[in-house]
Length: 486
Image (cartoon, rainbow, N blue to C red; front, side, top):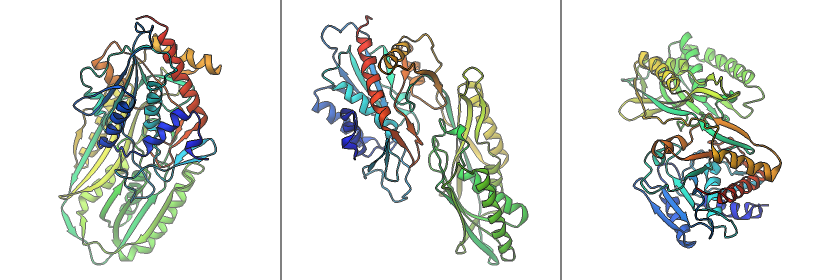
């Protein structure tokens, strides 16, 4: 069985087409053109704004012109993670695999976040049997790495009164709120120094961790490869002279790092002791993550002697700061049971040109003051270690409105179809809804979607039966709104 055999065919057919169009964050030109061509092919009014968002407009079914306008919203870009470091996300289509009730990609992220949102919206916009009021599609750029599209939505891109954000990942759940977020970057500068000749050099490698979404998966207790790397280096440096030559780990600010590596040296006389420390370290980590990180691999191999190393003081400061940096859940909500209130993600460490080492972290909270509090704590740690720290602009959260009209309509639609009342929740992840409210304060919004797992990692997969329920809920919600008057 392939994706072409899956139902509902109208949704999976469009989703397949989307998987064939490269769409990394900040490089959405190909998917934007595909959307414009789709609109032209189906004779749909379409426009774009200065940052590249795309809006489509379909007139109401005759007799339903006075119904509230509904906006179907999804983002164009996808997180690009692969088990194959040579996979070219800018030019290569995604290969999908049907595995029982699940759809996943062949060693890469699937892009169902948020390709299935686009697919559902386009299927609805072109469904001639669907009774609807004024219907819109809004497809934004750069949601994953900066929310640039939602932050800079152009005039005339939104006309309706109700917005369905199709970027959630749990069947039978409706989201009415989300956390706000901010990025904190920390830049170390160092003086290169010649590597000692009488040292033995190692390459320490971690790979195949679970990783995952730094919002929705942050409470799963998954391993952070960057922090594990720092932990081992700190342990070695506590006992022996340490020369740090190379550091690399993680990729994206909104993904838990699942791989990292470093090159370091110790006096040759301590080579065997370090190997023994590594064996103990591996046993400890395997025990700590038993039953969770079942694919995580750690190796320690001899490396060729590098020419240069980070100066000793800075190298130790970087290692100490990475080890001390908070990562994971900071606090849980006291208002919504089971909701993470505040968290922080130690996302990546990368060597930079001109003798720099850049550390990227990301903080989230549904309480604005706590978002800044945890960002400031990260700043304090790295400032003490000698880094230059900067914070991004951040984005606001989305405060739940339990009196939302569209929330009740979407909930009733699901219950009518499937006999289950969906849970009403907030999510510890960034959705674009809060940003839309800053410019369109009257919008009534909810977010829903089919079940996705392990997004932002090559293990991303989508539950096929949930896609049919998502499509049914979407259609029925639109039909119920069409029965209303503004």
